[in-house]
Length: 223
Length: 229
Image 1: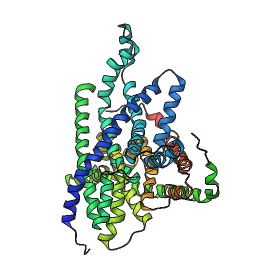
Image 2: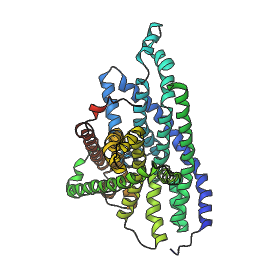
Image 3: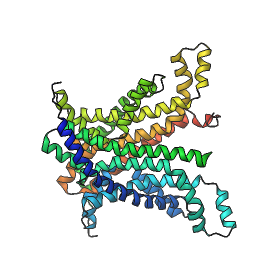
Image 4: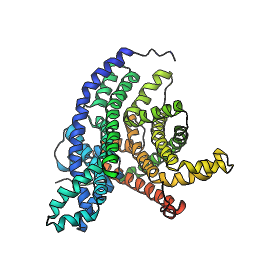
């Protein structure tokens, strides 16, 4: 163990990578927003009366949850342009892939959240003369959202972690920047350590937020 | 859409493709085994009374759970050979990284399992004169395992999917193999579709095996009505 650990490289890498975190955050926010919309519709579709909608939704969820994100990204970035004849930029392909991936997991969450609201509440809404849309958006969803907030934050953490895979298709987020730093400095140990530290700080904050949400949920809703 | 699909592009390479698939399954199984073993130890240590040990376990678990697996993989593969002064083959680095990653998640699952069994049961066992290992093996584990089984199966599915990232450090498991083949044949869409189907089949089977163990071997439904306190 006569390795001379370069503190200056670690420090420089930390500075550069924490600036690059803005790209990771941007990608995560876009993907999570789109993923939430996709997941919400897929979750509602799974609960609808139409067999076709239910079928489509479960095929989507099963396929996307059963295959690795890396394969999905490679498929979207390298495969789809050949078939469709259009080119995606890495960022667009990355956000697209990450959104669909997150949507599949989130749909199960939303479904669980909606199912957890007692049917009596729905019926009470109908007897008051509310329409299906009104009951869903005014009664069921607000309560469901509150209940699924802790696992929603877990999913957010998952999306931040797996956004590192976007480096493979060339999105210039934290991990991709780290790779270029390694080739410039020849110090992979320090640089990847700094990378892990940057992710850790972001995710630790989110994990604390998740714990807080869980505590509040327990106090306000479940008891 | 004038694209003509050529799924038969895989045909001359089918043997190698399946061999790479087998490699994926092998690597996943090895990582599961090592990860579970380490996870059991860490998870059990996490439930001990020593605050020092539980803190250490928490740091271990959180470090691996709050950083991306890809970064862990790159760190171990590119960073550690320099520190240790030895070269590590991609396969060894990949297995080490995924096993450690798996162990952190497994530790958390096992800790939850052990702690989900009411403490009174442990005390009852001890007061009946059973030794601690015996109480663990006969009373805590049989109940805990039924509670953690679904999360454990989820983790195993996750491990299978995470082996795809080995391709990034040039392990020729199925994703790595397909990447090379795709760049040779320019049939990325067909090849990645096939590889996605492969992963889907494997994770599907893992999920089904998990269900089978849960309901047929452990008879979960029989104790589902067990009162909780």
